[in-house]
Length: 174
Ligand SMILES: NC(=O)c1ccc[n+]([C@@H]2O[C@H](COP(=O)([O-])OP(=O)(O)OC[C@H]3O[C@@H](n4cnc5c(N)ncnc54)[C@H](OP(=O)(O)O)[C@@H]3O)[C@@H](O)[C@H]2O)c1
Image (tube, rainbow, N blue to C red; front, side):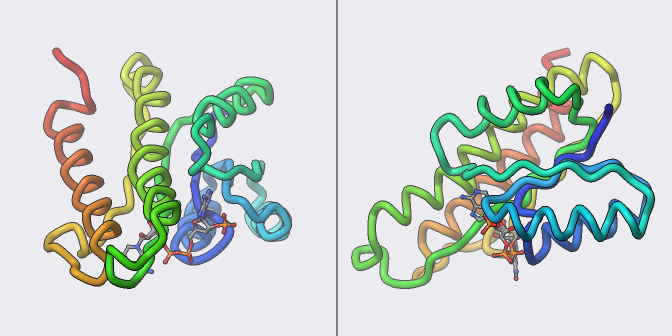
C-alpha cells in the first residue's frame, strides 16, 4: 500500500499536514514518539475521511531510527509514496549554557533523521518516477539566530540540502 509518511504528526504542523492530507484522501503513516496521540488522530482521520492511517511510535533522534522505521514499513507491506519530513524542535538559550546532549539531539532529529529518510525513500521514487518529499525548514534558515544557534543552523542545513536535491532533479546524477 502506498502511503504518505508524516513525521512529527502527533502535534503542531505535523498534525496539520496529516489532517490536510487525509482530507485529500491520502493514506497515511504517522510517526512521532507519543503513540496515544497518534492513535487518537488515526481513529479520527480514518473515520472522518475514509482513508487508512497507520502509526509508528519512534524516537527519530535515535541513531538507528531510519533503519528501524523502514524495517517496520517493509514488514507491514507499506511503500512511502510521499515523505513529509516535519519532526523537529528548537532549544532556546546561550549555546555555551544549553546542554550539549540536547543540542546534539536537535541535530540528530532536524538534520540526520531528515537526511536519512530522504536517502532511504528517494531511490524508489526515482525508479517509479513518482513521489515527493517536503522537508520542513523555517525562516530561521535564512539568518543566524544567536539565542537558538544550533536550531537556526539545522534549518539552514534543511534549506540548503532541500534546494540542492531539488536542483539536481531529486538527487539523480542523470
Ligand atoms: N511552529 C512554528 O512556528 C515553526 C516555524 C518554522 C518551522 N517550524 C518547524 O516545523 C516543524 C514542526 O514544528 P511544530 O511547531 O509543529 O512543533 P511541535 O508542535 O512541537 O511538533 C513537533 C512534532 O515532532 C515530534 N517529535 C519531536 N521530537 C521527536 C523525536 N525525537 N522523534 C520523533 N518525533 C519527534 C513531536 O512528537 P512527539 O513529542 O510525540 O515525539 C511532534 O509531533 C519543526 O521542524 C519546526 O522546526 C515550526
